[in-house]
Image 1 (spheres, helix red, strand yellow):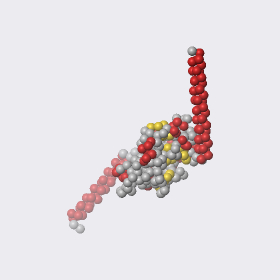
Image 2 (cartoon, helix red, strand yellow):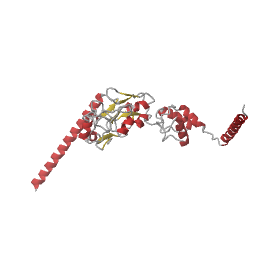
Image 3 (cartoon, one colour):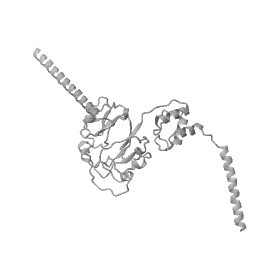
Image 4 (cartoon, one colour):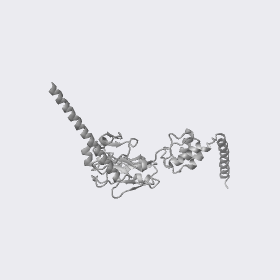
Length: 312
């Protein structure tokens, strides 16, 4: 063997050994003992690393809860309250229960309601299409229908409906990990409280155009007519930008607003038609009583005015 090559190899091996020894002693010198509770917490987590908790992964979440020392601002949506109770036991703190959430689709603009105005010829991606233009229909707020949300779902809790062109959430599989919500460039997916008995009601439209314009773009768009707003007794519905919105925290699930929408764009889940019909009848009776009371007050005021006129 050439002496130059031999001494080169020996030198490199020697440098490697010295570097390894230095790194070993440096690692020992600066080693930081990790809290054993972090590993214990990570063991009870789902380890899906979905990011639904707001952390980049389950290990980061475990570090965050141990560092915080309480669970008031941290929650694992995939594991839910059962997992968080185990985490609370490990940390020796009080468990904080939170209502379960589920992803909902805030768009009803299926193929039959939103006619195509052009043909998209590009990458089969909602995100790419959203960067290029507003969409292949008149509504610039609706679903683009290419299924980016379905692709990022690690729990097979979504699929694209071929008949409507809209994503469908499978309730039993959805973990509220928030992946689909973050992925949708149009923002039509939203985490919503599952509600009592898994019942919920929400408005499936985000079109902020004024009534007639919105309806031209989509036959089931919210026209901003305010009928649902006027029907709500609990101030759970607000009007902004020609669009109605239901606050799930204030909504009492009375269902009295549902049939006020002339295009039936107030969506319900796990609610029987009988309950909706009964709620509508109750609303109509209440409105009739209010109308009669207003007429009686008007008549009484008129009679009082006539009496004052006669006395004068």
